[in-house]
Length: 322
Image 1 (cartoon, rainbow, N blue to C red):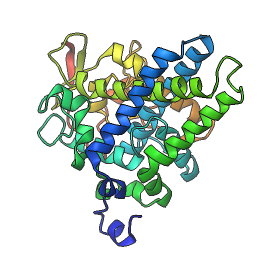
Image 2 (cartoon, rainbow, N blue to C red):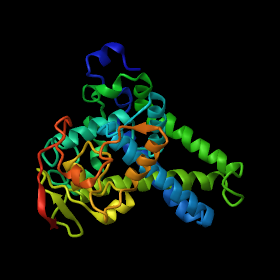
Image 3 (tube, one colour):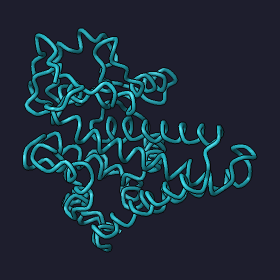
Image 4 (cartoon, rainbow, N blue to C red):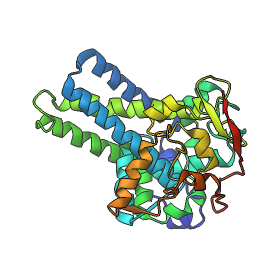
């Protein structure tokens, strides 16, 4: 358990990392999840209900990763209540991508030093494989420095979840889905094992690989299939196909220009489903102060100096295709 003294000095490190060999544990957990996906493909044939469960499971987890861990905890692009904040964090834990405080800490590091040697997962200064996955196994990248997330580390429930996101929280969610399958909640053709394999492990692995693609493909300007709207001081690029898979996160150059905004789309052809769902949640009062929920034209003309990681990046006169 994190001591109060260590929290007050803002140098607390996630205790789970201290207790376990970080690299071995990380590799083992990822190996188990990928083996589960292989088992699902080999021994549990897909049917229509399982396809629906897989699709819904992926969309929910992808939305939670992008709207909760990324746009809320890392960038505070909207506000909500303490209770709903915790519920959102629990939902994001089902993506099996570690805790909300760790996610915010690492991602803020990324924005402060994007595509420099200090960037924890840049394919520009590191190898593609390192930026895609191996950075997750490095011990220093599995720590949570609370001095960079003071806005959220003051909540004990988030500190607890940050330590137990990948074991207790994810395990409880997996058990719930498995029990629902066992008792026929998803229909007679889905049992507990098939629900666990196709409804938990497979969508979680897909989200992991989508995140890896964002960290790499959206920072490699020389590859075709993308464009830059803003002349940012990094190599970020918008990739429409990836944006469809990640519910809007693929408009990465837009995001690096306005990181504190809840939206990544600035034109009619840029679909940001994540932001649209946030607008629905705002309409029913579950979230509020959603940044960027006004006309795109005025958005592009705004400078938000309050954002810690926002850099001065003018709009390109013409879109730069790469």
